Amino acid sequence: MNEPATMHTGALGSVIHVLRADPETVAALATVDWNRHFRRVCLDPVSGLIVLMAPSHLHEDLTDILDRIVDAAGSTLAGAVKGLRSTRLRGRGDPPGTGLEPDCAFYVGERAESYYAARGEGAAAVEAFVERTAPDLVVEAEITHFDEGKIDRYGEMGVRELWRLHGRKGSDELRVDFLALGAGSAPRELSASRVLEGLTPDDVCEAVERVRFSRTVSERVEAVAGIVLRRQRTIVRVREEAESYSTNSG
Image (cartoon, rainbow, N blue to C red):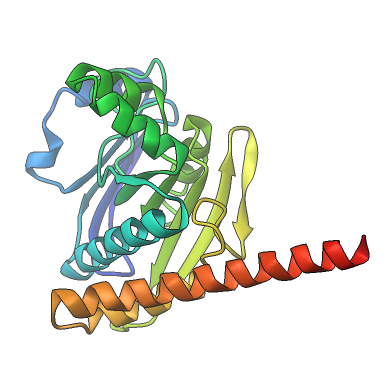
C-alpha cells in the first residue's frame, strides 16, 4: 500500500474505509468478493483509490428514495429511464472486478431506449451495452474529501451528470448539488438538471422530504408525481412563452 488506510464516519453515519495503492495491487484486490462485507465498493486502478463502505440506515433510505424520484422523473421528463442502482462502473481497459460503485446510476432518454433495445437482443447484448456505455446520471449520497477523485473518474467514463447529497450528523437537513461532468473538464455546478430537464436541487430535496414521511405506496407515488408534473408544467409554460415572443417579434 502506498498510503496508510483511514476509517471515518460519513455525514449520514456510514462507515467508510479509504486506502490508496498502485494499479497492480488494486487489480489483485479485485479478485476478492468485497461485497460480502461491504455494500459499496470502489476499486479504481487509475487513481489507486480503494473505498469500502458499510452504509448507514439513513444512507440506504435516502438512496432508495432517490431511486424512486429519478425513475418517476425520467419517465415523465425524458420518456424513458433505466436504473442500474449500484452496478460497478469500469473504464475501458480497466481490469475485471475493478470499478466505481455509485449509490444509484441511470440511463435516461436515448441511452435508456438503447438499453431496452439491447435487452430485446438478449443478455449478451445487454452486457456489451453496459460495458461500453456510461450512465447519464449517477447519485452519490456520501462523497468525502478522502474520495472526491471519484467525481472526476465518473466524468472520464462518460457520465454526464452527478447528484451529490450532503447531510449532517444528527440532523434531517439535506442538500443536493447537481454537477455537470465531462472528460478533461472540471465538474460544474448546475442550477437545474440537464439530464432531467428543468428539475432543480430544491425539487429533489422537497421530493425526498415528502417521500420520507409518506406512509403508503400511493402517498409516495403522489409525492414524487406532484413535483415532477409541476416542473413539467413550468417547462411547457416557458416554451409557450418563448414561442409566443418569437412569433410576435417576427
